[in-house]
Image (cartoon, rainbow, N blue to C red):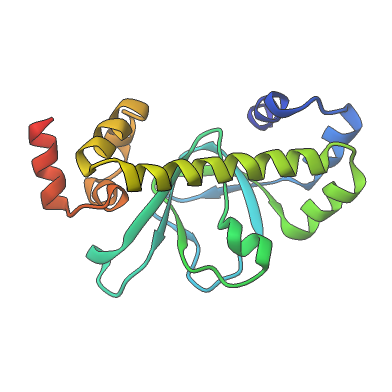
Length: 189
């Protein structure tokens, strides 16, 4: 709980009453390594804060080698199939824990209750949504403006621990190249 408190304290000051109400709605979950905890076509019912672990967002394909990894989330970040969460429509992608992952989750109806019953709920929701949007926007800009090699170097500089935790086939998909092309990039770099 302290991690999510520290994260939210960066956004706004939360009264003891609001914090107590909010934390009463959080559910701890432990997702085993390699488990898919949101399947394709399921409606996302949670926004979760990652206490520890790594989560991959991906579009599954019949051939697992052709899956498209388009995002990762880490400790001290929120994770959700946020579009499905907001629209209450089935998700077009899946969420998978790449390591054992500890989450603090709030479901849709409880979050609506936090919005309605706390002074700070709407502000936290809006600012969290803005942060998720900025991450997505940055990713899209990188895909449009940087070469695959530049994306790899940027990823390596920003998150060097990725290369130790995440299989290269997921990293290659994330930067938009084949595993063979990633191998050539790694040799050059």
